[in-house]
Every structure is written in C-alpha cells, then in structure tokens.
Image 1 (tube, helix red, strand yellow):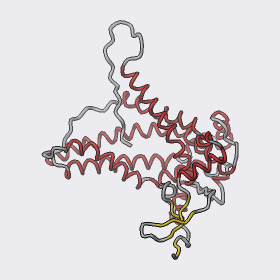
Image 2 (tube, one colour):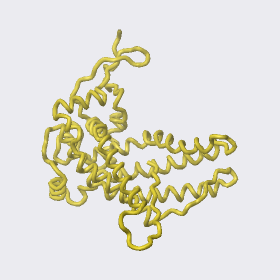
Image 3 (cartoon, helix red, strand yellow):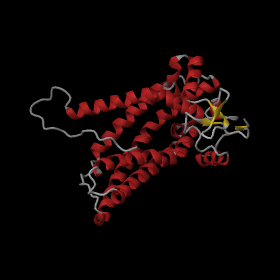
Image 4 (cartoon, helix red, strand yellow):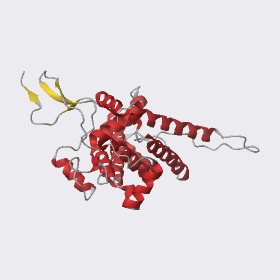
Length: 317
C-alpha cells in the first residue's frame, strides 16, 4: 500500500535534550497505531487464513442470489468467528497475535529507518500533459523508493509472519507444535534451517512490487489525463485516486498473497499444510498451478458472501 507520510525532520537542539523530540514522538505514535490496527484486524486475518487453507468446519446454508435463485453459501466471517469462539473462547480469535504485532512493529520501524537513511528528494507536483516525461520520471523515482522500503521491510518481518501463520492454522488439527515465538524459532531452525523462515517470501514480494507499480502508474495516468487542472476539486480527486486504485489492484494481486500464505504453512508438520487440505508443494509455482487448475486462486478474498463451489450450487424453487 501507499506509504503514510510521517514527520522525520530533526529540529536543531539547543543544549542537552530532555526528552524525545517531535519526530521521535510521531514515530512512536505511528508504531502504536500500527500495533493497534494489527490487534483490531487480527480476527479478520485469522478467519481469512483458515478459509485460505480450505478449512470449512461448518456446512453451507441455502440463500438467494440477486436473481432470487437459491444457492449454497459457505459461512461468512461472523458465523466463522462465532464458531472459533465456541471452540476456543473469545481469546481464541487472537491466536498467533503476538508474532503478528512484533512483525508489524518491525515492519513499521524498518520502513521509517530506511526512509530516513535514503530520503527521497522533494519534487513538485507535475500534472501538465506537456510535462509527461518529467511527471513519469517523478512517479518512477517515488515508486522505486517505495519498492526498496517495502522489500527490506518484508524480508525483515517475514520470519515472524511465518510463525504467526503456523500458530493460527493449528486450529485446524488442534496442534500445539508452535506454541510461542521462541519455541517456534527453535522448531523451524531444527526442522527446516534458515530457509524455513522465508518460505512464501517470493510470492509476497512479487505481489508487493506488482501492487506498487500498477497502483502508482494507474493513479498517475488517471491524474494526468482524466483530471483537469481547471476543475475546482482536482486536488481532492487526485488525493483519492491512489486509494481507489489500491483497492482495485489489491484484488488483482490477491493470488500472490494466497500462494505466499499457503507456502508458509505447507509441509510444516501441521494438518492444514498436508493432504487432504493441500498436496506437498515443491515450489510456489507448483502451488499456483494447483490452485489455478482448481479455480481457487481467489479463495478467501471475500469473507461475506462466499458461494459454495459445488456442482449442486443452484437449486430449483
């Protein structure tokens, strides 16, 4: 996603510093907000992961589509979450939260440190069609800078992402193999070595890069050619273009997220990463081809209206 600007200026100090300056305070607030969002969004990510691995503990129910015909719908987020609470209690919705919080904090701090170490030159907005080359060069430079921050951030935080994924999918087989961060690190190191901490990294990074380039370039061309500078609300429209493009592009890059998450839990000794949920994949490309052949590349992308993919989906009134 697009980077959220955070103040990183350093004000001149007169005498000894008695406490954190405005930049440090802003960074700390941003880290706290990031951790808070991670906590609030965790139940949603938890249910999504269980759906991604193909765990369907509840039977589908009959509903109606927009045309009024009866169809089978799989349980949505709220029904699925209620099932988790019935099995594990309310705290069960936060299984695997600790490594996710640490991963989120590390990612946020790392992005800010990289941004400070490699600051991007401030370039004025260019929207005139006659200055297309200058404008495109600006967008390319900004995207390359975001790409560098995202790649470094993803690599550093990915080991904890893997641990979090494995902690969560233990719900499927009721395992306790990955009980905490320290024991999980020891287990992965012993069974898989260093590479075990980076399974699923490649599709995640590829998805991030494709997202950044598509989102930024699409927003740039729309702002340049579709939004007239003479329009009163041009600046307002431009400020939302990237956000809207981000939503659209995220759907197109979702398969990379799915494949990365599945590879993180595949063949790790947990039921969710073994047949019948999934074969043992030799690579993320093997995983992609398997999902593509089954028409499951977007499994888990929607958690509200999940139509059952069975031959008997439709029913006669």
